[in-house]
View 1 (cartoon, helix red, strand yellow):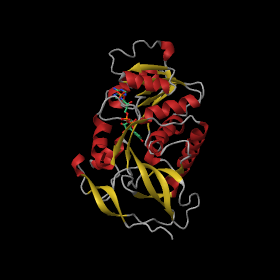
View 2 (cartoon, rainbow, N blue to C red):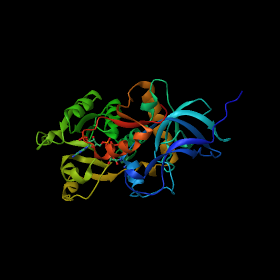
View 3 (cartoon, protein in one colour):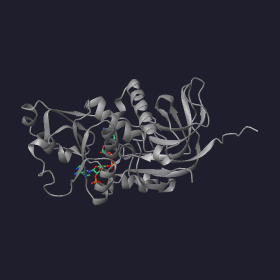
View 4 (cartoon, rainbow, N blue to C red):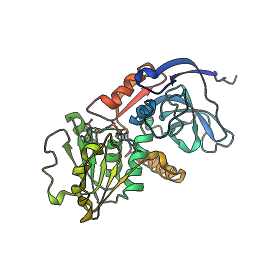
Length: 330
Ligand SMILES: NC(=O)c1ccc[n+]([C@@H]2O[C@H](COP(=O)([O-])OP(=O)(O)OC[C@H]3O[C@@H](n4cnc5c(N)ncnc54)[C@H](OP(=O)(O)O)[C@@H]3O)[C@@H](O)[C@H]2O)c1
């Protein structure tokens, strides 16, 4: 007999933007309907990213209608597909980056086919849930924005977190020389294990002093621009590119640092990627998983009822060691 999909599911529901307290576990949430070109994902694991907290707090440029279910990244099985879906069928292992639609902190999530990608058996669902925002952002920053090339020297300022470790793995696989920073011994060790050629501790006073004129960088990925942008600019080689990935405030820079060396600073916003850019990044991620150079590092796993704790930790805990994920089905 064909299994029938129950029409209610367990999910985290947010009915007003605000602090952690607005995240509530509800047991009778309607399973989302799917459109023509959508996939119903049976979510095993949801990935947690800083942006999830900005959205929940109502401090993001594009906000969902209320109530909404948080969670952009996720991994699990395809439960059902819309009539025009061509790349997936029920039972496929997949991961998603449900950008602009959210909803992975739930047992089921509807996702546009363009934001669903195959999850090879070499990666677990926890690793799958850590692929979306971190790896696609790292790829976009490195190649679609900075145009990083084989042999170039890269500084990842904040390499121990989700985007940073993804960038280390990707950059090393593409022949860049990588210097990564972290704020703890465990973070530094992880960045080195991910392949960085050398590491620096951004919590140590004067940690950049050892860099000489010959140690400058072609590309800098900056995870905390409000703290570091002013010091990044003079660290660039001639025609260097600094990509602002993360920033949580304002900063003073000296624009003259950009002039003589004709360097530039640019921002990255994953959500603005075109469909063909998503496809290009998806192909790269698939290639990296199959070749083995993409392997997400999971820092901590939470249950659905601990989702608030995960939202707290992604912003307030120090000493990142990869990704935080929520095991939706236990
Ligand atoms: N623009 C976009 O499209 C986009 C996409 C994804 C993420 N982001 C943003 O990028 C940032 C990183 O995201 P994530 O997911 O990697 O976060 P994460 O996992 O929480 O990692 C944060 C990273 O920042 C590092 N850090 C802390 N203090 C630092 C300092 N003074 N200098 C340099 N690095 C420092 C942390 O190192 P320690 O903990 O070891 O100190 C860690 O490596 C966040 O602000 C996020 O919102 C933007």
